[in-house]
Image 1 (cartoon, helix red, strand yellow):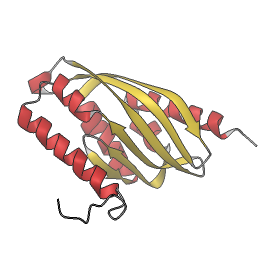
Image 2 (cartoon, helix red, strand yellow; image 1 turned 30 degrees about the vertical axis):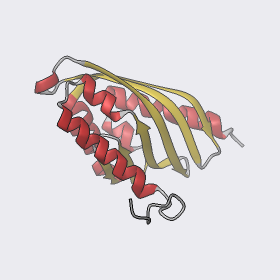
Image 3 (cartoon, one colour; image 1 turned 180 degrees about the horizontal axis):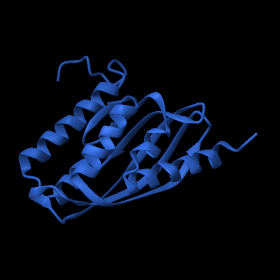
Length: 164
């Protein structure tokens, strides 16, 4: 039987290589047919066609020179986590040429050796600040992140049903 951590580390290496190179075929091949990628900036993408679009149109459509370093992976064969540092150079008109670096944590749920779902926690507003985003854009991103956190929380346990 193979070690789940070795298999997960190999998956992470192929994952980051596909993102860095913009190889959408290699990228989507890592996911289940109904796989989901929940990106801190762009939101949720479903299925291999949606995942290819995300990588092609959003990631590589807005940036170049990607670097993605995964660190401290842990995995039980079903769920894996890794902290990361991710960077790119913006190609968007308002921030062209700016190098952006941010850090976060990835959670990958696995099924039969493929990614069933990917989600991340990152300091998204730090990335936007490096792009020179105006205060209202930073505020909107913070509100989106807060809404996502609250939506995933156990409403009763965290007293979200009580009046503010």
